[in-house]
Image 1 (tube, chains in turn green, brown):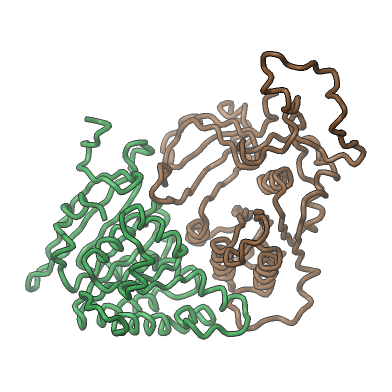
Image 2 (image 1 turned 120 degrees about the horizontal axis):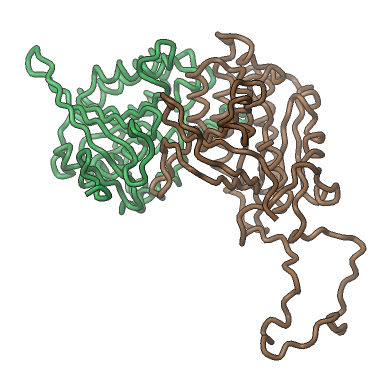
Length: 269
Length: 310
């Protein structure tokens, strides 16, 4: 996990705020480094983590987590981590063969218009299952990423329904947390742009407690600054919605990422 | 052309190839691969006599000072696939058949492969479904699957897929603004990504993006890949006559480079000078594009395809 990001978010593995929905998004950039941060953060916090890895193989996340000082294989073996390897499971459905009865989570690929019920049932059984002997903390659901579901033919409405069901189970019922990655392309102001992703992002942002939006620098490429992150904490006090926005720049390096206020990069100072 | 360079590099490096095309027969594509520049490429010659160990090396006296180099060959006569990055090619010539035939090639051509009964369970088109199945069969049969036991020496499978999304694959992405099979190609690319991640293979896919109007769809397609390059030819456009672009044949926009975190490459937006040496040894001399107002923040390089420097 990134210690600088923890201090920005006022978060620590020792004290987790329950019931949070965190939306990580990017526009013409790549925010997946934040997913690795939250994965290692919640594993260190001894939460039970359900990770829907839909766009990369398990080896990829494992290799990155090794650099952050965690072993995903060990986490899986001791029952702390339930990992859905979406790519691998999808092949048995996309290329028809003898049915693999192990995981039905990706069954929605056969009929994307029917929704994500099978995926939700997988999540539900993962977070409520009591297979391991150890007592883990509140459950956490991590999704990398939701936008790929739109590419596979699932409607934005169905994805929002899925996130709503997950939120009801994990955040409200079990007082756990959720982190979801949504990827957009194109400019925000375009009317005929990425309607599915935009609608999904707006719907999730409305429900969430914290958003982290990653973008490239508006001035173009810089070797020492890889982009900017807008952190927005949404708090509801009574009838009022109180948002707190902060903007940081970041640089991804070998074993982590550093975050700094605009104009305070070490290359500049 | 990038596809041909990619496949040509595969031949030179002795990788196996898998080529799929709907418009041209894959064999025709393989016959048009560019010729490698032969200074340091060994051509397997059937007539070459094996050297007998007792025969003295011709015309080379024994080295007295540099005696350690005595037994090295006079010229570097092997295909250095791992010690150098890429090879050089001559676009004006095609590869010699004997070099090309030394590489093992598999092909997929829809008119030949789609005679079987169609599978109605897949959200993909029949052509994409059959292609994915054929590719998986080759991967499993030839031992490229990562789960296969490491019994023999491993090789790489280079997969070249030509003009996906075009009407010849049965897709209507390039025909309508609201295509009926909107998610067929992206679902196929997801399956292809799954195959690539679970095998010792790498794929290059070409798309007629000028025919696909939906920018959101192009965004989805780009995000499903690890790298995306857009080539824009100046021919026929206003840029052909623009004096700023007179030394260039086209524009190469590196629109997407996925982060393989942690690494020192990152998704970035820039306009900067860059020489792109693609793995196929394509020597693209790239320079800073002329500034134009309102330039989008993209990695844009003007480039021309030139012969490699001698």
